[in-house]
Length: 268
Image 1 (cartoon, rainbow, N blue to C red):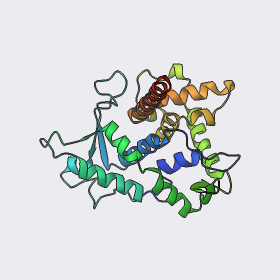
Image 2: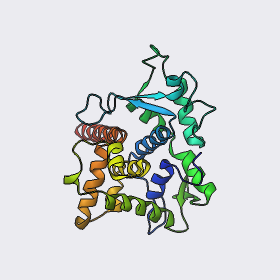
Image 3: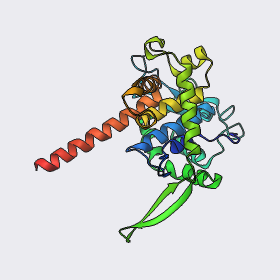
């Protein structure tokens, strides 16, 4: 289905590649961004729908959104059915299988059962990286490096022979930013889909930009004071995408909880 094009989770992992060491360096809480990329890919493939995620200030938010497998919407037929153009990657298939099995029964034909978006992100994030790292190794984009820390603790890391995979995806993000106006001239409150239509941009590329910002990769891609406008634009795209907003919310919630736990441990 996806041909030779890498999936959004694979793109995010290649963006984690350090161009100098050629090792994959995932930021803290990166699993949530990968889970968001999985759901974005499934949504682009019309395997799921996400309802109630209108975005900041809208009638629905990322916190209240629900993920609905399309077989539930279509009664087992249509775009999301098993005989339709569904996902064809082990990581996507596993996520869709879990969503389909876990979704509650339809309340009525017009109100199919769905799962809370934060729950889906947390569950998918647990094992999100493995299948996509494996596929990148199979494609020759990454290599496995197994070694022992202090000669005792086994550890698996990933590296590339060159920075080409990272550079190509960074160039894609750069092309999107060059096609967009400054933040001040973006239509206020416009969703990623609306921005894509108004600028004739590929929605997939906009979602990659938003997820990269949600994963805090925009600081690596555009470091320094002189590139703050690019970082700000990426942050704005993330704010306009409710999946990326949900990713960032979980990241911040876990970070706050960890900080609070650490402060409590110090004080006792």
